[in-house]
Image (cartoon, rainbow, N blue to C red; front, side, top):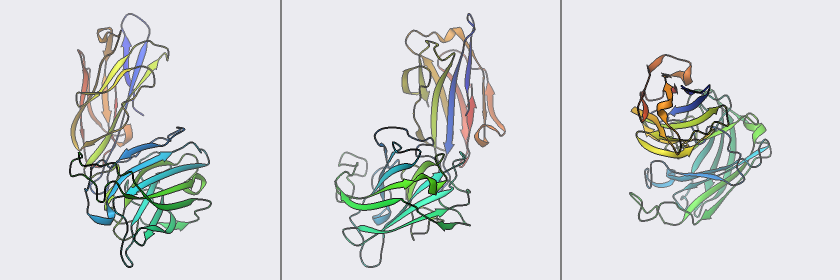
Length: 324
């Protein structure tokens, strides 16, 4: 992970800001729902980043939730389709996508299909994937045991997109079809497995281009700024920004903006002083690299003033880390 380093001119102190950027690929987009395990007692949820009714019919997804309270043994996931069901032999199909080695690409997929109208549970299949894309289970892939993973499908009344949403409300608002899984982590690579996204597919085949993803969007990315203080008890407070907008206020050691979906192109990251902090006491250098911080330098410099900012060009499908 990248680090944003400052040296305090009148004390032997250093602060670190960490920027993690995982970007999307066209129709194969960025990672990560939450690219780290969410060790929360309650579910962490995100609505479809493309908004309401972004794709038609049975492939439209509206939200995803994950609860890692059962880690290291299980993760509980739920996601919604914006449709009540299907007719005839048609199905609704979606997969939980997991990364096990931290590169944002998919190693396992836990897939559920529905049947009928109103929709009910149809089938559960777990796949081992070839770690080559961020939004699908690329070939060669193979079916593996689902172990004790259990999934259900029910009708719910929690469509997150009401009439005030752009292109809202969702179809049949507030009704959705909701799938819930308790995934045995040992069947998807173990306790290091991280839920990246949930995507729907046109044919039930998880190696095809997705119809919709809750997190990843074509030519989009996720941008996160974190703050780490060295020493950890440094009292400095910082307001963290993405594209000039403050996303986290008065954060200290371990503070974060959370992940923000951004389109491909040039973006700025930065910080301004929080309560009781003077940026003039700090000098800053920055270096941004692709390939998750191990590749070519994309930009470098020594920003000063306030805000302290750096601009970085985010190419579609790239993985950029900026070190300040």
